[in-house]
Structure formats: C-alpha cells, structure tokens
Image (cartoon, rainbow, N blue to C red; front, side, top):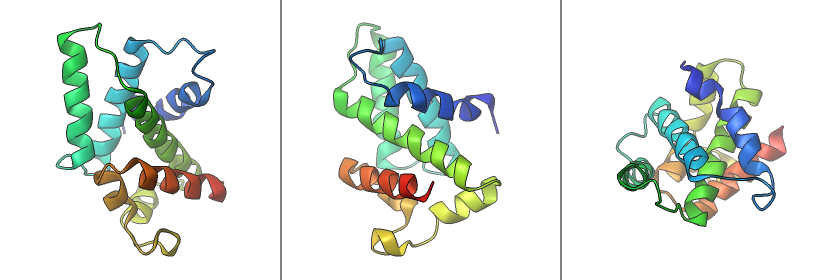
Length: 136
C-alpha cells in the first residue's frame, strides 16, 4: 500500500482539530482529498458517486488555486480519512479491513459500508464513522 494511504491517520488527526484554530489551507485540503481518492480506489469505489465528487472538486481546485472547498466537502474528507484510520486500527490486515467494508452490518441495517460510502450521503457516512469510532 502506498505511503499516501499510510498518512491517512495523520491527516485525519489534523482535520479533527478545531478548524478555527487550525490553519486549514486549500493546499492541505487538496492533499487530503488526493489521499481520499487513493483510499476510494483501494476500496474499489472508482466508479462511485463519491469518487466523482472528489475528482470534480480536485479538478476545480487545480484549475484555480483560489477555489474554495465547501465546508461539506471538508467534512466528508474528514469522515473518510477517519473511517480509513479507524479500520487500520481495528484490522491488522487489509484483507480483513476490506471484508468488513464489503459485508452487511446489522448496526447499519444490513447495508454494506462500501455502498453507504459510494452513495455520498453525508448523514450515512457520518453514522458509519460513529459506528467505527465506538468500536475502538
């Protein structure tokens, strides 16, 4: 797995800090979004709604470095980095991490975590994040 994915935990910690006291620059958000794209590819979500969202946002940023990422986009980025970081804590091997993501979960009304993420519904992604957080 690439170095960028291994840095997800570190980037997540930065996003979890109070954004008013943290200088969250456009450049940092773009770097974090690129890591999320790598994570989505690792989860085999390249053809999903959420992947397209990240590609579009990064494309807008690359066209103009003055582009402002929305608070919603920054929040989703934080959630996905957090989900990935928590899965790395819960499962020693990537194969178990991927199995959990691809299996129905009773706590999620038997939905697949990957489907929840791929649909890009922030409330559901946040619920998934809170579920993982409760397991650590």
